[in-house]
Image (cartoon, rainbow, N blue to C red):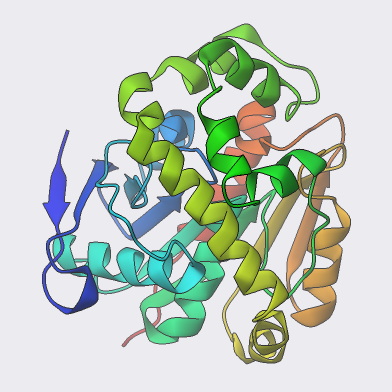
Length: 283
């Protein structure tokens, strides 16, 4: 599987793992908290006949480097831009799941000319408040979060992940837990996970007003797909996005939790194909 090393600026030398498939307009898939590139396998297969589809491991996750860094949205957006530079993508459509949605929006605000359109799946959106679960609040406490991270193991991860689905299925759960397990659960990965929780909390709590002011400046097509029974990011989040960003196409799926691209793959992939793979305007 390929890897790239970013060059220049604050992220110089950062190694990122990614997978790519297909040929055509560029589409970049951005995973959520604890996710990884290969978790997009079904989406990549569905889109690859009409697009060049890239899925990367964000820094701190999967098989990408896990430096001590400020794991906030600005850092992830800069890494996404650096990735596009490194693999030669001038502009692309983005698909962001959960935290990856927030990263995608931050990237579009950072460099709007490089992002054609954004699809958001069960996504967090900076500037739109989301209630934090008690478990996340505990992990954000310095010292206590590190102590709890020491207790993590595969069975616990599987139980927590199963609660994100409306109707958990063994095959995707096993893959999401076991794939590249050592890389994704080493101590540096656990510290990056905690750092991301804390850094993104700062974005939502202290920088939220700035993002709310910036959201209406996005002049690109946005598709928001959300599970009606999503226990992680409430359905109301995408409704609030549509209010903040008129023109957003909101589609809610019944009997669906936090992973619509897995739980209702055929429907979601059809929608993504229709939305993402369109002729680009001249630049």
